[in-house]
Length: 141
Image 1: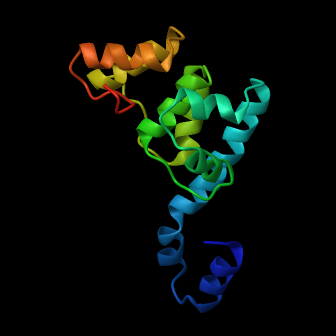
Image 2: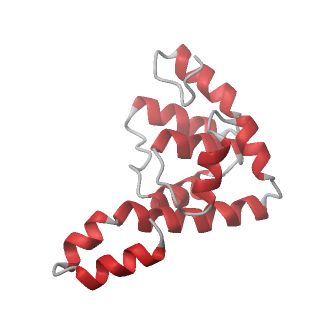
């Protein structure tokens, strides 16, 4: 949905709350996009590295960068681990994306937090998750 489409919906709506609820993921996608682009620049990582290091398609990654797609928590974590984000950076991405937070009392999330804090690769994180009988972030396991 482009800006013109949203403007038309704003013009026609009689209930702002419903409109905002309908577009919450789109608004979050835009915030996430800004932070994702900033992290890529700060870490001097090309977009191709994310594409090659995750199981996310090229078109999907570019739509994320453009703020045109929302994403799942696992997709976000694939990106975060590929970028070697700190826990704070990961939590910031989570906040902007509007996906559920990492929860230290969840065994799967605890493994992911451990991986982030110990700077493990996406592949190594997936191996830890698989070894503990949890769904890996990537589907190749």
